[in-house]
Image (cartoon, rainbow, N blue to C red; front, side, top):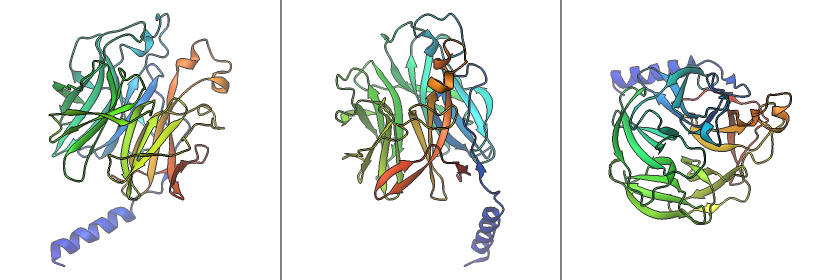
Length: 331
């Protein structure tokens, strides 16, 4: 080992040794201070600022006298930051997204980094609507600082009703996206491939009969995993090649938790695999049932972000939402 390699090794050991003990994440992990409607989280490490950033759909849950479902429209993507490994989060405003008109709706972002550039794939609804009957599209944006985003392109995915993109890099260097195609009669998750994050080719159905939305794909414990919002907790698939998938029998966070703010099924996930080998499930919950007692009318619209640690038991992906989460995400 030369002097430089030795010095780098010593530095890494010292830095890891000086990491603070993991903190216990609160319940809820995060709630938006503006509209109290945080949903659809996605996390990424900000390399320049040395902190974690959470992007999320910011539903207008606390806004009054909005007709129909207009409260989930007209939204901007909220941002929060954590400097303690994901245990606590501070609201930092909304993402500056250079696309569309002022009333455009922004939903369910996915953010990744490649070759020094951050890429966002974002669900867009062109306006504010009182019902669910509106076109939806996925656009590609790029950024150098995670705050200011430049429009690159609208993706041609052979449908005018697409939302909830998730993107990962495959072993051969190409990229794959999973998304919900709302034109699909069976509600299945679809996929597309790209050689460069810009040119995308729709490939068709990824998970026949999956009936859900918000797919999240990650590699952990020598397998690819796909977790998605099955509208009955979070459904789970696994694969060896990221193409052929097998369904796990049991859904995650299907049964209500016992702790306040987490006493209903979980929705629309993200998963972060920490460099120390642990994996964490982020999801959102509506404030209904016991969590809406003695609250004003419409409290069921309010949503918060939760976290639970994933475990692999006998080849089955599990988590205990009631167990304290000692979290210290390592980038």
